[in-house]
Image (tube, rainbow, N blue to C red):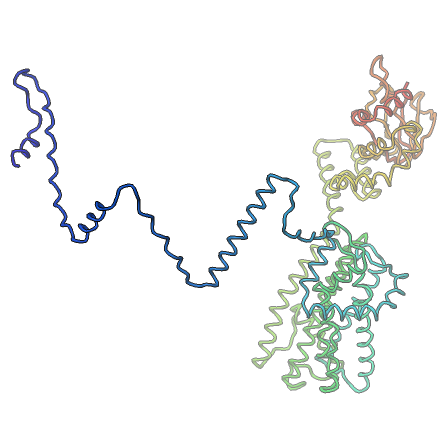
Length: 597
C-alpha cells in the first residue's frame, strides 16, 4: 500500500530505452472491495423457493388499488361534484370552438344602461348622501317653497341672477348693507362702553337695530343667492346653481352667524349691546363694496383717501371707548387723569384719544400704575397705527398723482436737455406747449403705452369703438374688407400738431398717410404759403396718393403743403404697416391700387 502511494507522489518517470522523459501509463484503479454479502432471512428463502416452484407461463395478477381515504364525506362529495361540472363545461367549450354558433349555457348578465355625465354625477351624489344631508335638503326645500313668491316678484327688478362686478343695482344695495354694517360697528362699541341705554333711548336703539337686521336678512335672502360666479371658466347664471353655491360658501356661514338672534337674551339679561356683537361678522360686505366702488370710479383715489380717513377715525373711536372704560374702572372724577364726568362723555373721551394717539403734548400726567400702563400702551399703539396710516395715505396720494409725476419728470428732463444744448427759446416754448396740450387733451403722453399692456382682444375692441365709424366713412377704404380696416386700426399712431406746424411739405417722400381725429388742417400754397386751397376737418384723409403710388418716376412725392390749423390730433399709418396688412387681403389691395392710379 505504501508502495502505491509512493508511486503516485513521485511523478512521471523517464523511460530508459528512449532517454527522453515520457509519462508512464496510469496505473489501473484498484478494484473495489466486494460488498459483504447480506444475510438471507428465512422468509426470503421461502419466497424464492415458491417462485421457482410456480410455472413460468402464468403471471400473478396485480393487487387491487387501496380504497380512497375519506376524511369528510360531505367535502368529498362537493369536490367530486365540482370536478364533474368543470369537466362538463370543458366539453361544452370544446364543442363551441368547433361549432361557432353554439351558445353558452350561462345566463347573459343584464346590460348596464349608459348614463350621461351629469346624470351619472347626480346618481353618485345621491348614493353618497346620508341621513343628515337628506334632512338638510328637505329643510332648504321647504325654505325655497316659502320664499319662492318673494323671489319671483323680485325677478322683474333684480333679474334671475346678478353680475356682482357691473350691476349698478347690486353695488347700490351693497352701499346700503355697508351703511348698516357701519352702524353696528360704531354704535355697538359705543353703547357697550358708554351709558347710552337709558329708558328714553332704548326704543330708538331697538328700532334702529331692527332696521339693520332687516337689511342683513334681505341681503342673505334676495341678493347673495343671485350672485353669478365663475366655474371652470364658465359664468354660471342658473339661479338654482348660484343659490347652492352661496349656501355652500364660507360667506353664507358668516351671514348666518351674523343673523343669529342673540338679542333674545335681552329678556333674561336686559338690553345690552354685547349680544349684537355677532353683527360685525358682515365685514366681507364692506370690503366687497369698497372694491366694486373703486372699479367704477374714474378717480378711485378719492375713495381710498376717504376710506383711510375712516380707518383713522374708527381707531380714535375705539381709543375713546377704552379711555372711558378705564376711567370708570378707576372711578370717574377721582383723579385728574380720568374723565371728570362733566360735559359730553363721548366728545371729551374722543378729544383725549386724539391728543393721546397723535402724541400731542399737554396731557395730564398719570399717577397710578394702571394709568401709567394705559398711557404707555396708548403711545405705542399710536406710533404704530399712525405710522401705518400715514404710509398708506402716502401710497394713495402717490398712486393718484403717478401720471402727473411722470408728465412733470418727462417735461423737466426735456427742458433740461434743451437748455444744455442751447436750443432757441422759441423752440423751447413750442415743446412746452406741446407737452401741456397733450397732457390736458388725453391725460397721457403716449396712448400706445397704455394699450400695449392690454390683450389683443381688448385693444381691438377699444380701437373699433373709437375709430371704426370714422374709417368706414373714408371714401378711399370703401369696398375694402372690414377685417382689413380692423387690422389697420391697430397700427395707427396718434400725433398732436401745434398751430402752424407743417404736417407734410411739397416734394417730400411720402411714407405715411394721415387721418384727422380732431382739429383741422389746411392745404396751402403760393408765395409764403399764404393761399389756403382747402381746409380738411375731422374724418378726412390726406397723403394717401403718395403712399399708394410707386416710387418709380417720383410717384411717391408729396404734391402739396399741409399745415395744422390750430391744435390737430392726427392718426398716422405708415407705408410699411399698410403693405404688411395688404399682403393678407389681395382683393382689398386691388381696390386700393385702382383708386391710387
